[in-house]
Image (cartoon, rainbow, N blue to C red; front, side, top):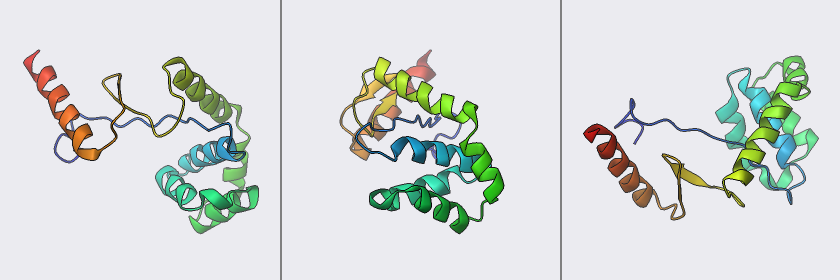
Amino acid sequence: MLKKYPESIRIVLKNYPLKNHKFATKAAIAALSAGRQGKFWEFHDELFKNYRQLSDKKLNEIARKLGLDEAQFQEARKDPEIVTKVQGDYREGRNIGVRGIPAVFVNGKRIRNRDLRTIGSIIEKEIQKTKKR
């Protein structure tokens, strides 16, 4: 869809660290910290590949694997701005009714059926609506 409608679609990822996963918040902070070095999505993908083994040690291993500057990465992980961002994303999710992940929204409307065809169809309809305006 992004390739088909590059000017019409924007993907926004919000952090919603699950409370029952003890490393979820640390993982979200680490991914945003990696993002400061241009490696957010790579770090994000590694987190999901390794979600059962997450620990501080594993977060640092991922950072090294991706070639991050270790000092910058560690400094960013302590940055109150990043911590506040994760907390704010979580609050925003709670306020709009998110209780689990992934949660998908198109133009502010929650899509409960996460089948890619269904989402694609909804996106197509939304794009057509905006073209008619």
